Structure formats: C-alpha cells, structure tokens
Image 1 (cartoon, rainbow, N blue to C red):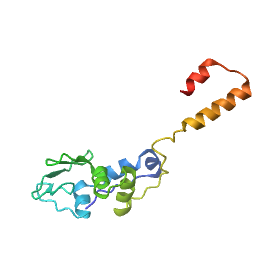
Image 2: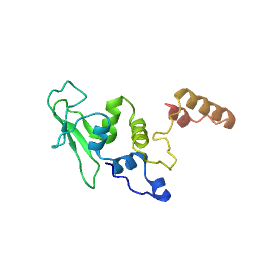
Image 3: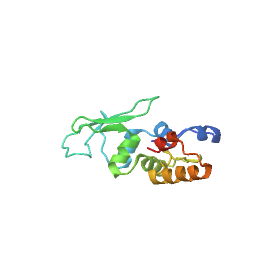
Image 4: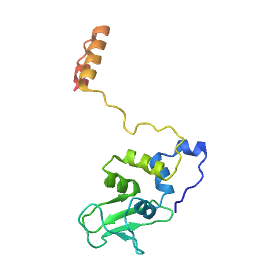
Amino acid sequence: MQRISQISSKEASDISVYDMVKENLSIVDVARFYGLEVNRGGFANCPFHDDKNPSMKLYEKHGEPDDFYCFGCGAGGDVINLVSKLFNILPLESAHKLAHDFGIEIDCEIKSVRPQKQSIKAKIERYTYELQESRTYSCWLIIAIF
C-alpha cells in the first residue's frame, strides 16, 4: 500500500518533512485512504467541485513525486497539496497529518519555514535605542528604517 523506505537519522536530518512524505506515499493510496474512489485509469471524482464524472487524474510517477490535476476546475499539485485542499489546512499541517496517518516517523527537528519578521515598530525602537546609545545620528540609519 505505501512505499516507506528506511531512513537513517543522519539522512532524516537532511530531509524535510515534505520530502519524506512525498517520497514515501503514493497519491493513489492517499486519495483512497481519505475516501476518494480511484478507478483503474487513475481518475477520481474531484472533491473540489461538483463532479459527476471522474475528472481528476492522479499521476503516479515512479522516481518522482506523484501529483494530481483536475481537468474540470484546474486544481492540481502534489500529495501534500491534495490533503491541504481536502482538509483546508496549511501544507505543513497536511505533511504532519500524512506522516501521522501513514505511520511515517519524523525524527528530525522541524525548523520554521519562514523566519519571524520583526514588526516595523520593533525595528524603529531598536534603531532609536542604538542611536541614543551611540550618540551617532547618521542619516543612513534613519533611511534604513524605511
């Protein structure tokens, strides 16, 4: 049913949760697990629009990440996008959901995908403090705030 490979702890630290899920799960198995009926040709009724005839094609690509495309509504993506759209959750949440539901252990520490942005107010306060401390009122520093 699923293509789970053994991954050493060193390899796991170098692979993201997205890659682990994409490499180890078949999009057809995932679609069936979450209730979609996939026919022999790899087509299913699209859950993202009112579909009476199968218009969503699930592509199983051996050696590459699987993906899907709906010829009715244009929805498409990989296995993580499919689950993300099915459950209306973020891609990182869907990757974790897939890992949990299919028993893929994630040993590596997951780091934030996006660094947290500092608010403009915090930047202004920090630069104001630095200006007061150094007593240097350079023009370039004021321009750097904006």
